[in-house]
Length: 358
Image (cartoon, rainbow, N blue to C red; front, side, top):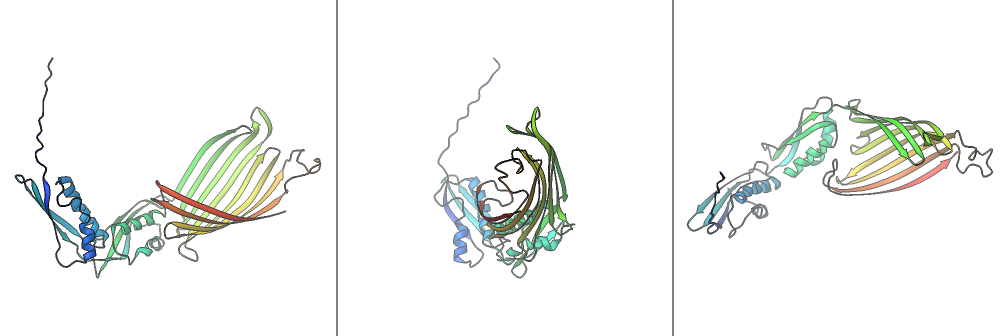
């Protein structure tokens, strides 16, 4: 039938084991550093020798040195395999280089974004021991500004007087973005057709002030288009300005005035209000905030059943009314990434005090 069969016969033989595992250092090394680095080896004496683990050990040892604050560390090795005795003698040469701390940061690619405001985000790491984790932390802190297409922190290539300079390359994103959508909301007691538009400017005035403008323009029918008891326009205009660094460099301030026109069963209303708040991060995991919200609400086109002049019970709400709310917030982020969390838990709590008057 034109087919052929190939049979492979494999004789594994005796496994090759690691008979000797030597770590060669160029001179005296801190015992704690030596113990920690050597513990990063992927295999140990007496275990089977594998090329993959040997190569992985080269990387693990170098990474351990980098973590200990040796940014110029170099690791090389040799493996002598005796195919007759089935043993391997492995030697790793570790050259730590000078130990260093992060002394400065340099930016490349900034155009419209002011360098001093970006530098604020990473200054807390200056003076700390150089390590891959801290370099990644600097990169994530700059990404958190949300004004760059991409951010890349380049590890140091030299040490001067025990200090390194980290290069952070960035590519600025377009500060303008627009989102427009058409929506149909259907409920048992309400239909609503609307256009929703959003505009964002991430660098207003060239000072990293962010503007988020939300607008909604629509028409609602209660309960539905073919059996309408009440219908009318729906409008929402809400610009929000956020700015970091006023009074204290880590404080985040927000201001969000709002105008709303809407309707509910038996009445229509409009409201004018504002939300003013400030928040701050602590230890990169905890956030505290304080907000003050004020809303003026006025009702019109009241149903006769609710009108105080024709109802025996009168209004069960004030018309108009002014509502003032002070709210404190606390949140803890136990997540893998603050800016784009994928795994973890976020715990939030709030406490508010409200007052209302005509």
